[in-house]
Length: 365
Image (tube, rainbow, N blue to C red; front, side):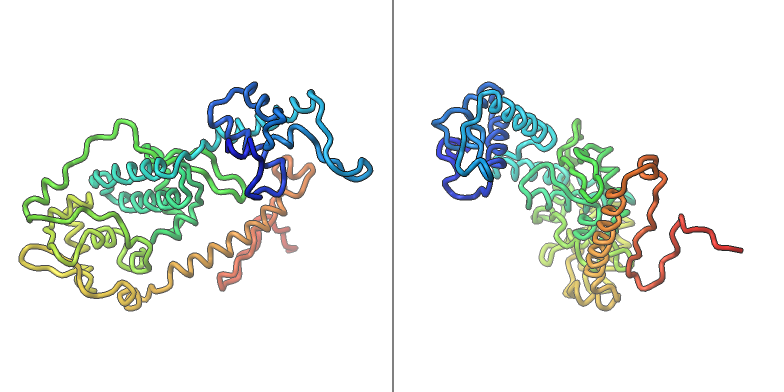
């Protein structure tokens, strides 16, 4: 950004001078410059990147080319740019360098990974899947404040978007997730992923694993987004147990319970279900993965393609809601201002005829 300020858009990435000036102002805010320092840098004729502040572009009856801005106009323009940059800085802080962001997200992942006892119970596996999906989005976007909707997260997990919404609420109460920007209209919410304050020390899973010899490191979920783990398949809890199994070193029941945070009876029940479909096998020293493939088991359970159909349905819902939202927000007047205008909900192609709108006119007797 310093080179852009001094030399201008040498790489030709900007088609307009206005967004480049805003980017330079935001960079100044991120660097800790004062407003006076920013004004001085942008109005300096030696800094080619501040050309939008220094001169306005002429067109039409005024001719072509550039004309220098008067001092008061420069100060006004920089004030507008500064205000927008400060708002952007406060609502979406700079991600920083890529290695720093990746390390921060890895620390959050490791903190959750080292404390499997936090992800037991009825809702624990869902919370872990949602947290992992949100971390994946953050890694792909290289930011600690990822933006994602409940449906987008549901497409990365075997649970539906209603379950994702409840899991996010529990993660927020526990301190793993902070809602930075609430969803508005067609815009998804923005979250901050972090390690909860006052997190208890790790439980020491390896102390339990020492009884069965040398074991590989506990696995983070890598099979969550598969059709076989949906609720009418084997379920997300079975997926949590399956993900800890390996094809080499056998794991005992107590070790699996410690690594998943689940009760031994729950682990035993799901191990038997996995073994019935060839996904797990037992031996003298414990349990290992079976030879069956997830795709084949999904076909046997008649759940193959569930996630693809869910993603297609979400795409239809987004398009229908976009039309609905545009129609609602485009109207003005007494009814809208007082909340009395309620257009009928969009008809989605689910294969059945949707019920009539809530505000349909009454039928004559």
